[in-house]
Image 1 (tube, rainbow over the protein chains, first blue to last red):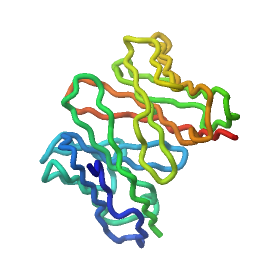
Image 2: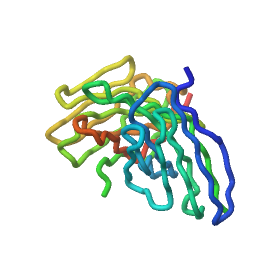
Image 3: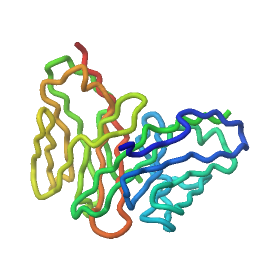
Image 4: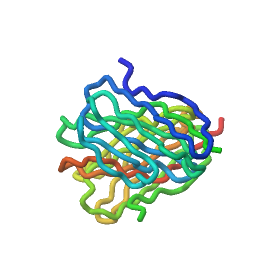
Length: 115
Length: 114
C-alpha cells in the first residue's frame, strides 16, 4: 500500500516557467489537500478537494491551480513560477467516512526552488 | 489571522526529560485537535489527537492536555528520547460540514540531546 505519492521529489525552476506537481493516493480517500511549508511558518493550505470534480481555495491559492478529475489524483499547477513559490509542497488525503475527526495522510513532499 | 498559535518555536531537552509544547486556538467551533510529528525529509504523520469532551489523552509517552475554557491544549512527551527529535505541529479542525480541513500551528523543532 503506497499511501500518498508525490512526484518529483526535487525541482529547480527558472522564474516564469511552469510545472505540475503530481499527487496520487491509493486509499480511495475523498478529500485531498495541497499544503506548502516554509521555515518557521508551519503548513499553509493552498487548495483542497472534497471529491472528483470539486475543488476549493485554501489560505494561499494565488499563483496556483488544481484539478481533480479522478479520486486518486490531485495535481497542483504553477503557471508562472516566482521566487516566492520556493517552498516544500505536501499533498495529503483523508477519508471523511469517519464520524469524528479524520487524520490526514501526507506524502513526503516536493522541494521546489525558483531562481 | 493565525487561528492556532504554537509555542515555543524550538525546544532543547535532555534525554529522559519532559518536553512540553503549547497551542492556543481562537475558533470555538474547533472540535478536533491532532498533533503531527515530522522527521526531516518526510511528511507529517499523526501522533495523537483529542476531542474537547475529554481533558487528557495518553498514548505511551505522549499525552495531550486540553483546557476548553482557556482554549489551550498541550503535548507532553515524557522520558524524551533522541529519536523524538523532530518538528511537532498542533492543528485544529471542525468535524461537521463538507469543507473539512486542518489549520496548523507554525511548528516546534524539538531536539533531545543524548
